[in-house]
Image (cartoon, rainbow, N blue to C red; front, side, top):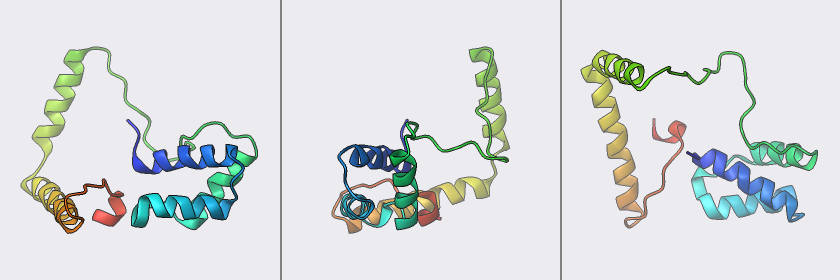
Length: 123
């Protein structure tokens, strides 16, 4: 699944191939994604990477970044899922509901247009 930031990096790569300038890339992303667009610094950073030949649109691995977990069987997936769900507190559910409510309010404010937002904006 492609999140909005990743989607924008793909778009920057595409715009680099179209020989757009970094400023043009930033303006186009700002027009398309409005307040959810990547910052000017991030657009310029990814522009430079793609201009220098980078192909991957994925984030670089950094120390402390979780490594995707692998399961040996569907049964182990079910067991781990149940374990994690059972560990959730009332406060966890309340936080989730509060975040959902904020997104729905934004949707109503935009006349029904739903836009998935970056976590930093919602929280």
